[in-house]
Length: 212
Image (spheres, rainbow, N blue to C red):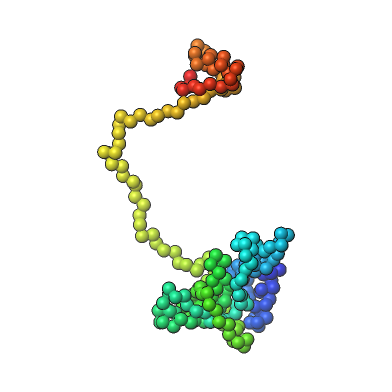
């Protein structure tokens, strides 16, 4: 895992011609992407990858290079990029979402992290932008802002009309075994205990409806 992460880091640093500090948010996405690559491509002893073992079929996702600038198509339900009606934007490719298979991109113009299913790669001379990579300000753990709860938990009220004061709880019958009496003792003079001891010699146990 460390080797895969190191390879991803060195490859991006070579393309950007810059050193990436460990504290930068893009490193968190790099770790996530390296783990995803391991699940997709590393074959286990059973001849299957982790992706194939979990989903039966091999992974068919088309990946880009980590940190690559690409154009992405807005999802139809979002109504265009930023509500403008333009269905294409430009973002920094940070991997794929394992659960949905969507591409994850960082687009600061459109509010940060974006998800898309359609990706258009740019020519080699336009794929990597140092300033765009340095502008990544979100991690996989900070893509959504916490919302204040709109509801308040209240104590559930019981209608007095639904309460029956004469209701009596039903007690289930209790089975006492001979081994229980031998381990914990019995009540002297109790006919049920004496019967259990006598009956247990032949049957092993007998029903006892109440405790002694």
